[in-house]
Amino acid sequence: MRPHEGQRRPRGRWRLTGRILMAILVSWLVAEKMVGILAPTPTVGFWRTLEGERAYAQAYAEVIDTLPVPDDVLDVTTDYGTIRALRWACTNPGPPLVLLAGHSSGAPMWAENLPDWIGTRTVIALDPLGDAGMSSQRVPLTNFEDQAEWISQTLNGLGVEQAHIVGHSFGGANAAILAVRHPALVATLTLLEPVIVVEQLPASALFWATLTQLPVPQDLKDRALAEIGGVSVEEVRERTPMSSLIDAASAHYSTALPLPRTLTDQEWQELDMPVRVDLAGTKSLAGGASAADRLHRLLPNATITLWPQATHSLPMQERETLGPQLMDFWQSHD
Figure 1 (cartoon, rainbow, N blue to C red):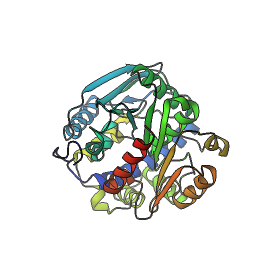
Figure 2 (figure 1 turned 120 degrees about the horizontal axis):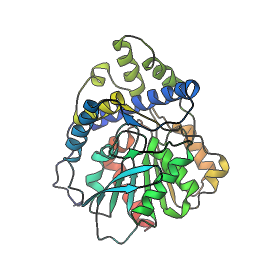
Figure 3 (figure 1 turned 45 degrees about the horizontal axis):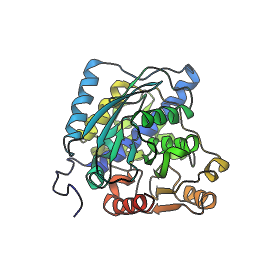
Figure 4 (figure 1 turned 60 degrees about the vertical axis):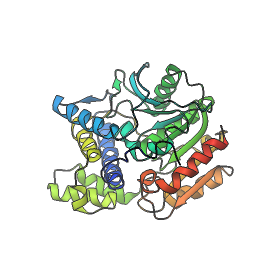
């Protein structure tokens, strides 16, 4: 029996929400490219309205309420701003698990997976900087490498000398650049559908995402989100605590994030920690089978897994099978 098996499972359709989150991520990437052309000066992220911030905070609390109560809720000061960290302690002496979330979600993104991991080792979920969450940005992130700097400073502030680093989507990209820039902090690197760092986004996703940024009818925007996420239009419009959180983030938070970049062959080959990468075979934003081929060539000792039926919401969709595999991977490298 896994720890906290009797705990309430997260409410709502998390897998569906993961697909909607995927659509919002791609839409944001298109918008950021436009902003980078029109207004290249870096800024900091901020809430556009107090009402939007309150709506996000309420949804955030509702999602976290489905989980075991964190042992610590910490605010860590870095050169770039204050980072919110949720920590579930454990007596396991191995390195802690540090979770880096995808776009427009924050630490609650992991609500489907956390009950399986809490109690097996210390788990730390970070709210991102320059994106929606309870972290607060003060200094702009001027390039992709700055993502590694605030994460490394946060780990130092938490007294973490080394950790199992896990990232999904945009968080996977951040995890990858952390491993490149600060390899000593990374006991193992787990990348779940990491965007852009292996391959650029597929053209079809960019086409539909572009429509979401144009002044077109809402019905067409809903169709575009459904096409990107691999769901129906009706499902795009469905409301859950998690989708309400993501809606509030995408509608009311002005994101200020540098776009990830594709890592070079040399950068991948120089990673000397144990690496695991899980990629979706359907609606992948990380490159799917071609990304798996590239990584097999560059990282022959890594665990590269392609999930043929999975989408970009792989961590939630494949939780029952993926979760035990990940725990075995981390335990084997404690």
